[in-house]
Length: 121
Image 1 (cartoon, rainbow, N blue to C red):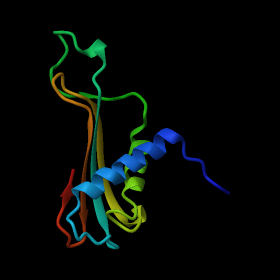
Image 2: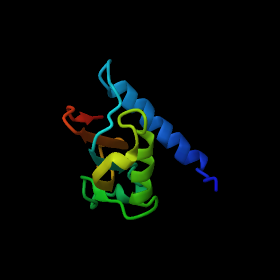
Image 3: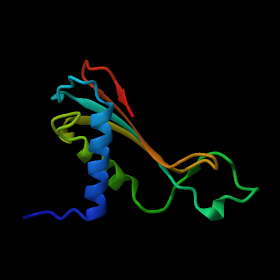
């Protein structure tokens, strides 16, 4: 049975792969070892949370997209770039926020694989 991945998800996975390739050392060899991944998703802060009385720092994001779907897409994007397959991931830590008032949206990914140095971008 074929699976369907929508265009937005494919675009995000490709973006993750592209940023990972740029962040990797020049002679990076794809890792076939256990990995741990830490993901922080920072979304654009909605205008309704920009009032003076609203906290200036990051705010927990409790709306869609679901954090498990974000993690799946980010980890899939790293397949064959950082590690051979996301099945090699043994631990994931993840959080999602609305950005602080003076912060740009971003995704921060940290990967630790076996004896290799940690990667963060």
